[in-house]
Image (tube, rainbow, N blue to C red; front, side):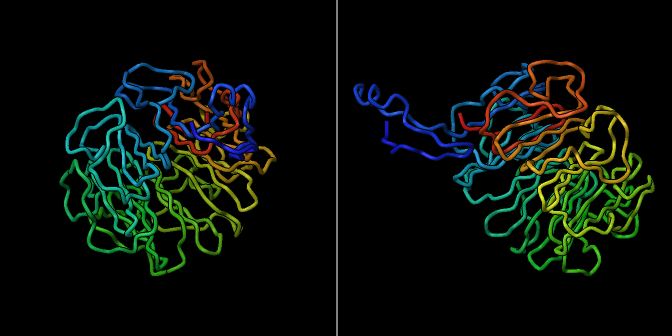
Length: 387
C-alpha cells in the first residue's frame, strides 16, 4: 500500500495516518477514504446497480470502484461519467434509453461504447442526452415526440450526434422535451410542446432544435416534466410551460408558452427539477435553498404539505452545496459533507433505513460527512461519498 504523509487532507476533514507505529511495524500505512458509489430505494429493473432487484432503504455500495465523477438519474435509468471520461448506464433499458444498442434492463453499470470523451450525462424521461468534451451533443432512446432532435420520430438505442455543431454548452432532458444552450448564450428547445414547454409562444411539436427568442444571455437550463426553467447571465430566473401545481413559481397556476420572469431578483445561481417532478429546488448565490410547487408528500421540506406558488426559503441556513429531486422526494448535501432527504419514502428512497411513507422536513442520511454528489431518480437515489 502506498505511503501517505500525515496529515492527509481530504474533503470533509483532515485525515491522519492511523496507528502509525503499528502500521509501520506491519509494513503498511493507512489509506485515506476513497469516493465510492452508493444507491438506495426502489429497484424494480436494477436501478440501484448492485446486481439484483432488491429494494434497500439505506445506502448500499455499488461495486468497489472509486473513479465515479458525475451522476444523472432519470425516470427509469441512471447515467454516470467516470474520471476517465467513460460513460456508463444501468436500470430500465426500454426504448434503448441506456444507449447500449438494445432494450435490455441491466442491474449493474455497463459502459456505453468505448469512448472516453464524455463530459455531461443527462437522463430524462425515457430518453437520454450527453455532451462530449469536444462540444458535440448526443441523444438516444424514445423519440415519439421528436425529443431526440433529429428531425424524425425514430427511436434509437445508441448515442447519435445531433447535427455537426461543436458549441453546445449545457443540456437538460425533461419528460419529453429538451432544453439546451450554446456557448454564444443562445437557448434552444425541441420535442413535446403540449403545454408550451418549449417557450416558443405556441404548442407545436418540433423534432429539431428551435431557438427560443433571439437573446444571447441564457446561462443555465432545467427541463422538468412539462415545464422549463432558465437562468440568465444577469442572475434572473425565468420559467414557462405547465403550471397546474404552481411549479413555475410566479404566484399563480396559469400555463405559459413563453418565458416569464420569476420575481425581480438577480441572485439565482442554479435550479433543479426532473423529468417526473412537479416541484422545484433552487439556489441563490448566497447559498440559500428555495422551493416551490407541488408538496403533497412534503417534498418541499417545509414541515407541511402545502403547495407554494412562489419561492419559499427552506430553513435559514446557507449551507447547501448540492441538491437533487425525484418524483416526490428531495435530497441535499450541506457544506459539512452531510446528506439530507425529505418527501416521499414508500420505497425507502430517502435512505433513512425505514419505509415510513413520507417526511416533510429534512432528515440526515446516516452519519457520513464525505458526500459530494447526489442524484434522485423516480423512486431511488444514487450518490458519491468517501469511505
